[in-house]
Length: 536
Image (tube, helix red, strand yellow):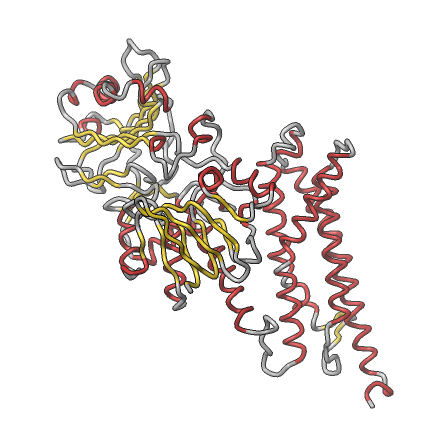
């Protein structure tokens, strides 16, 4: 039986495969398309040979450390997005574009030399051919108790695959619409999947290769905004290669999906004409056009993505999408499940890292009956490792407690300090359970130093909670931001800086009380161990 089945051969699935291969884990990738990459798609210009990205194009080193480090680790060269020069604005359909006073449009963005598909190709080269299964469309997922059964449609044939662990590295909203789960997923998870917009799913992108970068020669950056009602391409950017000699302009279409379908025949001419209107007649009769309408991609765009108007891009997701399901046998992945950078390359890598760690914990637990090794024969080391592992597993329980308290407050018509009260209650509950566990831990206190009334074991008791608190806060912020129920409570929906500071002060006070109580418990254990009658 397969250990880990990865559904989706985009960046998240391929990055996870790389992690598993390094650990010599058994896995296989199943991709619905006849190619890898998902929304990563690069065309090659027949005119210039330049790589033209029709999907993701940029990453931002200042705010996206994972993809920045990942590219460096793979040895893939990158270059800065060209932003130098005049930015243009076309505000009226019958007028000329005008210079726009604007800072750097792309904020320090960089691109991968040779296109983002180089990232896909590099990762795919590290995966044995027999582990990649293309044209496998997932239709059903069934929990079989000790494994998961997957049903794929391959051409017109249904194929079953059994795996101990399954990772669905696909847009959650698309999965909610197209995949059958047996048993059905819980309502909260289904709602979270359906409410997660797929980034760029209903959008379309055009890149046109030219013989020369005429706009650069005119002192223009290649950046332009078209805002009149008849705009075809709303945002335009320079898409030249790293040297600037292979010329191209790219853009995102303003036409919604239904209008793109209506104008399908004449759309190429309209896109070329608008580029010429913005940058001048030098582009007339020139240009090799490449166009990708992601709304027409059944393995990217769901019906709900196509029907809903494009809203503000939220770069984080509902934490329910990051919860292991079916006792850790099923994991939701893909960029839209990320804590940070959702929808971007960064989010895909974060999701892969999260799932890799979750699978590693499961494998460690499966390898040991107790789920924890005995460390160097030391009862204290083993007990504190057990305590640390327990704390690491409390994030989900604390978040569930937060949601339960929040729902009770909403059902009882409370309107003030909802998040503040709910998160403090969840944290205090966790600390109370931690004290109970600390009481029950077998610890040898005879040689444990006590200095100025503080047990030397306290740092090891406190340390696991650092990640716990941060994870819980991140989950609360993301959940509130994506919660429909809280959309009528603006202060709770978008937690302000001042409100967060108040919450953090409450948590700090609870942390102080817990630390003092934990230290008292350890001192009591030490006092008990020091009694002569106990020593004998």
